[in-house]
Image 1 (cartoon, rainbow, N blue to C red):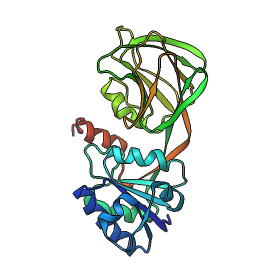
Image 2: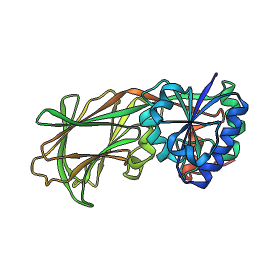
Image 3: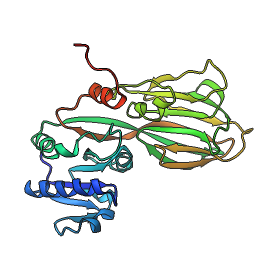
Length: 291
């Protein structure tokens, strides 16, 4: 794989990130790559060989983006970079690292394999969420992991109903609802009791949050489904929709939240040693083989 221009993205003012960015800079210039670096990191690095660039510019001009940090950094970058034809790989400087799977000690080895075309390229789909008020679009955004309808107050119930492809599914009194992609099935959805979905599945999981009935259970639907959440007018205000726990859209009683698969996708690159089940065993502390 020919990666002539590479973008570097990372968490500012983080010592571990700075160490990995320095190592990446030396590696990429030895490869003869043109290197762009996110503008907020440019001053920290103090390296004339690096060209400062906004995230959108990296998406437009780079062939590969390397995100240094945790899954949160990857999610923030992915929501933008998914709009462009660019490969994205992560160096883990965070905690879990479900999306950033290159160990900082293995940068040279793993990138050698990726640059030689041995990387595993995986397409991950995103969610697009629109908020309508009186049938007029009020706000829109995207999510890699999940879209969450919830109350602005902690432990505060709300009433809403769910339609799938125009057909009524259920109404509910609960703290909210998580709509997660396979990528997000190991994130907030998992802690809410949702199933783990293999990342190759074209499916979404709907996970009720502390429902006021014992019969409410997570359900998996086709990823091409149009999910409509209608918020009851009896709710108090201070309701919200969150995308990846980063972006918050305000909603009012009576609003409609429409969630569907985004036309954009994230082209995630893994080193050849990548094994999804090994990631689950390692991150979730599952047992190893008996023999």
